[in-house]
Image 1 (cartoon, rainbow, N blue to C red):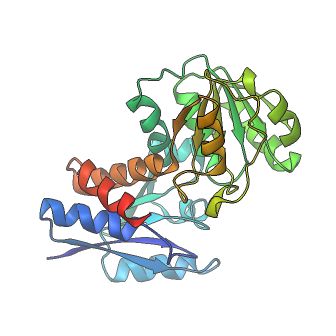
Image 2: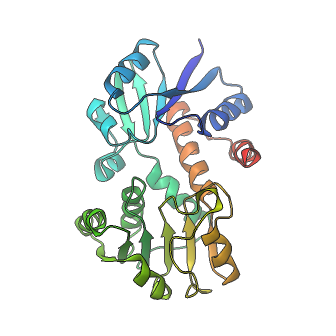
Length: 273
């Protein structure tokens, strides 16, 4: 019997997940299919019930449901507990278990480059949905300090407290100041949507240098203005598509218990850009 998987969110039509997972199922000859299922904000409870009715095997959760979905889970993994959000759910006999693959998905490209984050100072730009998973990742890797640079101070202060609660030193900086002192940080991570569609740069890059590791979680375009400019300054670059691919692979492995086919998924993803 064909197992069905899905991604839920709103908007959902731009999602790369169906192409990625269906390519992986096809490559490994698994009798599985993956669909995009739009659930508007406020309709999550009904949406989840509908998924249970069609006996969904598992699903990914994206904006705006990652936090709210926690209310409908019967069990959660440790990353979910720490971050307070889920992006991967397994359904076993109507019992829903949540996982968060964003944490390890974020860390994976850093580890692939054999970069040790222990004791590092991190500049995190943005205080949106992805920021908590990124902070949790650096906490797991025993980074030293994480500075949150954001347009509004209020959102950032919540994350400063979250970082301190999991054992990191943390403080806030406005975006202007962050650009001035960016050379004090080993990691510069963009977790805002600035750079999407190739427009704009979240901070000034003139002080980024050869010691900097610049990680932009925006994956469209592949070369955002931040990446482009930082590359010219000699920085080490980590691309947004790498995180997208790594977290998808981890979801696939949770659902199937099989190693995800990296090359097949990578070629499918890059073919879409």
